[in-house]
Amino acid sequence: MIRSFRGGLPPAGHRKAFRSASSVAGLGCLLITLAVVAYTQSPQTARGVIRLKVRYKSAAGMKDLPRKRFFLIKGSLEQNQPLIQQIKQTAATSRDCYYRTHGASELLIKWLADNDCESVYCREVEDKYISGNEIVPEFRAAYEQALKELKTPEVARRWLSNYLPAELRDGYSKTRQQTIEGLARQAETSTGKPVMSIMTDRKGTAYLTDIDPGTYTISNLIGSETDKSSILWVCEREVKAADLYVAMKRPLMLSNEKDPKVKCEVIERPLPLCNK
Image (cartoon, rainbow, N blue to C red; front, side):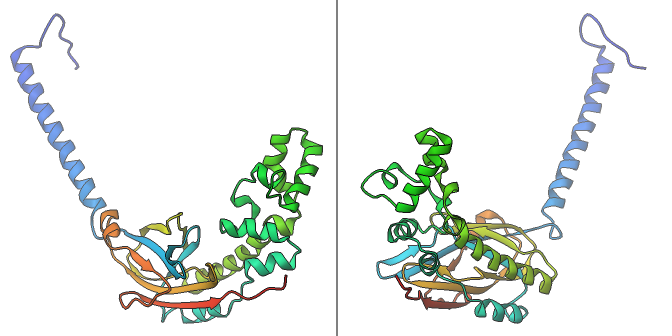
């Protein structure tokens, strides 16, 4: 039976019993908390983290490789040899050649190259590219078409990308994505494990987290374009249970320069010359 005490504190005997019960309850909560922490930090549940840093050597010195996707595939280089051979043999059209083949103007190609864009959706089209002294003819034509339907100049500028031909809008990006998805599916089929992916930020850094400890292959699957070359990485990394603090101190550094500390095959090819 629950008793209520009105008009002040309960009798001393009850207070003592109450303190004892509270102490037992508190001790019980502490033991449960410690058990939960011990369980979450046990070897059976510990996870791994990779801090990826990607750079390349150019004529202007070392540069970060921004906005490029990398993939984590279960298994060592030796275990993934059939897949790696397929990756090496997969040909990917360069951005310059793709857009020239589809009739893009030199000004549109320059606009894409200035910010390393694979499609026109990667950055906002500013006024100077539709009415200023840097007019891109494809943007101007799309803007005029958008203005007829949307009526408002600002709205037409923001949505003009949707009025470009599909092959100039995002055809190149979709072509590369289809190739990458095909290779990723092949990796999942051969390993029986899902493939993780991450994109580098503007400083060429990315984090792969919540990884089962083990040996993995890390690759961008198809060559990433730099100033004058395409670079394909196929690397091996043993992932151990560790936290983000450890990963920050021990990043996986990828570059197009030979590093004996990294088990990595780097295939660098010059970008092809395309007909103007």
